[in-house]
Length: 106
Length: 121
Image (cartoon, each protein chain N blue to C red):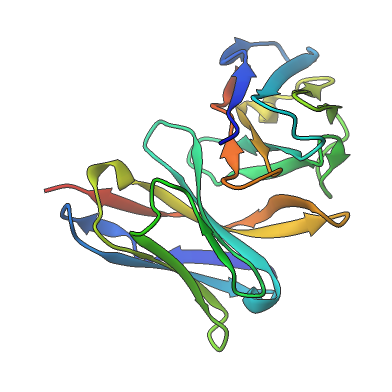
């Protein structure tokens, strides 16, 4: 199985900050990498698919990059509603696997 | 409106069974890939199972042989039959649509609100 890791596991930031979250796969997954945001008590929400493509309706302050084994999610200017946990997920091969999550505190 | 609504969760004893349902509106279950993802209390997301539009199925090793994913096209509903339940199956279970973007790129783009399964004596 492909193992996904994320760093940091949590971070504290202020409104307006640029935030970067890193995801690493245990083997190359090309660009088969998705990012989700989950707020407490809610279902996850797709933000980015195929490493860098913004899902419809997602604010442009979110962006993704990377290929192979190393990926990043960037929030260019953190907003109060961005308080959440962010997960990466590989869709290169089954079983699909998620990273352990990065909790962003405002 | 596109919507997924899970039901069927609850408290069950170890070794017991439950069937989860995911009623879909706004798109056709049989024409899409559909998946189940679970989340243990305070933990991260774990992919559980997938059914292709063609009917092929896949499972996580942790549930293989115990869980069965299926669908009823006439009811536009996805199911997860869970047998031989264990304490470690305790989780919120989400159904989601697995969409193919730009050809081969799977991503879970529409999610239900989840149904809670608790396995305890």
